[in-house]
Length: 284
Image 1: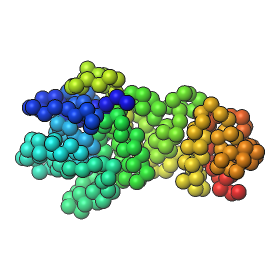
Image 2 (image 1 turned 30 degrees about the vertical axis):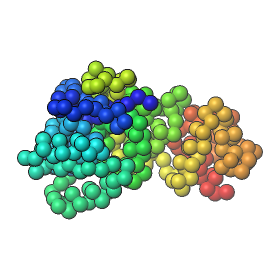
Image 3 (image 1 turned 45 degrees about the vertical axis):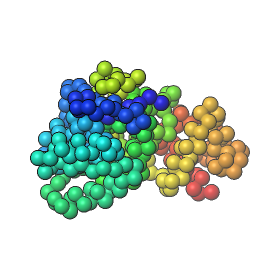
Image 4 (image 1 turned 120 degrees about the vertical axis):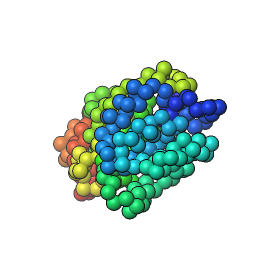
């Protein structure tokens, strides 16, 4: 998989991007401004930045917010960032792996320190190879954020935005749209980064829903059904759900009870239709 973009600029002294960490530093100021504007950051907001890189997005985001906390995995970059923002008491740099960070607790601690902080906004330019795990961690952990604005590989963005019936629609589309409303912020092309990645990028904003897009009786079962449905995209739902339901015949009966033709494929079902199927299995 191609390496993905990271926040920051190539103008960072002798520091060299690390391929093993998927580092490609954003170097186009216009794109940076589009990300900050599109993220909806307001003056009292708490911003959690994932992977600040050399900090090119960090400063303008912090200028728009009340406080910014950046989480950086690269131990060589952490002292560079801390030195760069040493005079800014509204910016904090934390060394750590976002996938191992208790973001809910981090937010609680920040708001305990400063009760005047408002909404939480998550932003980040992520290495492509961990984009999906990071998004899923934030959603599954139910991080109390108003929005998540993330730069990602264009192909992944298209999957997240996809509607039923298309080849890009899948479990990732449903997971993101179940928890969030999704909107496009801007595009970023390979030439906007140093070094240049092999593919283009897109920035999406995920606004967390107050109420989920579907209301299954058992959320875990719902996503088990979604994953099973897409496990073999070319096969019918009755085939894909046979293991979950006990047999192909039982799966067909459950689908019919839910008002779904057993010969349909997962990519044609809406989130509400998946919920009906999951609820029929739940009632078994």
